[in-house]
Image 1 (tube, rainbow, N blue to C red):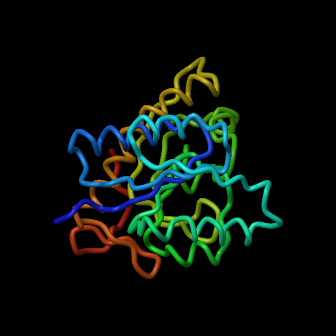
Image 2 (cartoon, rainbow, N blue to C red):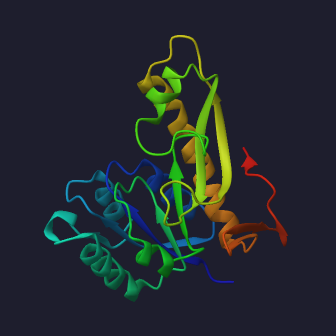
Length: 212
């Protein structure tokens, strides 16, 4: 079976992109990253892609009149690469419902919290403010509602006394780099699919997110 063709959307440093590149290169996952697209020209993730000989594109959202125009240009840019999976790796744009529907069941995101807790931004600071004892990251399929799609896998870390948002973020990043390639690998193996808003794994509905 051929490798799963994928494209990755990024906005920043790209450490999760690097984890996926490394896992693809060493054979840990059977995934071919065909393109990387950033809405920010200065994103270091673009450098990571070029170093791996992956086509890297910039599509500055500020150059478009509205969200729909940006999303239409993004969809057109992706067509030649024919990705069967679209991976959001630190992509700091909300995609329109029309774009999401185009990739329904074929778009993944990673979020730095144990969803449904703390959707949106500033998750680490919010967890500390709530005196949470546990925090982590979630890989979920993307729906039109922000950070609300079905969750495939979660990785957890304990919140330590004296933690700051920065120290907590560092440990959560380590979890992200472990669970995101695993999730993509399961999809590449044909073990996981999302249909009608529900995740199926190994031929059965997934009752709860996998914990790693």
